[in-house]
Length: 222
Image (cartoon, rainbow, N blue to C red; front, side, top):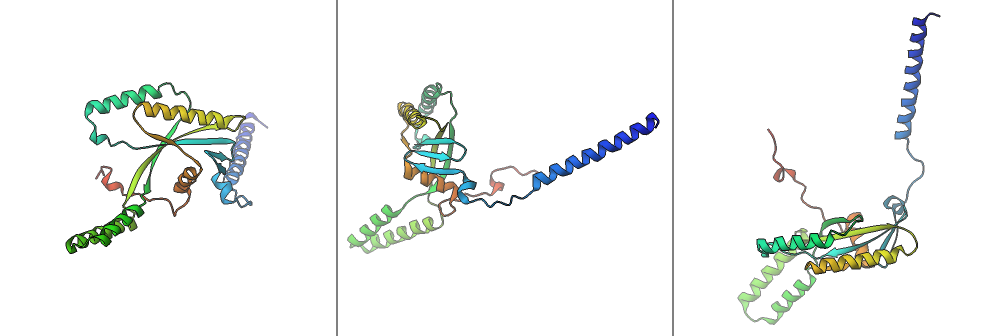
């Protein structure tokens, strides 16, 4: 066999072998698993206990709820001072922090009870009618999911090791003190709060669907 034919056969072998490798790779990528996963296996949360979330990949998660501040009530100087103070407090943090905020429906039961009490105690017909109108409007907004508040959270995590829970709790306390020195109130998430937070992501009955219409948010090129 001359050199030309040898090169030709070699190229054909490379194409065939390369094609078989590519086909096998595609089969592996799109191969369906026979094992059915449970919901807990898919989510990856093993347990939620006390102030911690335990995950299936060997991590422990803790977090803080950060109470909002209406910056519209602050002057420009007060806003600058707040930013500088918070930046200075958090500048020593070297480990990973995950910040996010979500929309959550507000419980209007206390407000409804208060309005019903006013309606029952007043003898003024005009006032009674206005209060009933106000109550109906509040109920309408609640049913339509329009009464929501933005809640902010800061989450930290650590590998599941000895005393990792104590270390996470100490870090949460340190972060809480830093935010407090900057004038921002925080709260360490306990077990009910963590369950409620997870439900906000994983349970459609608790989740709030925000407006996803992008036309009002992006300039459309024509």
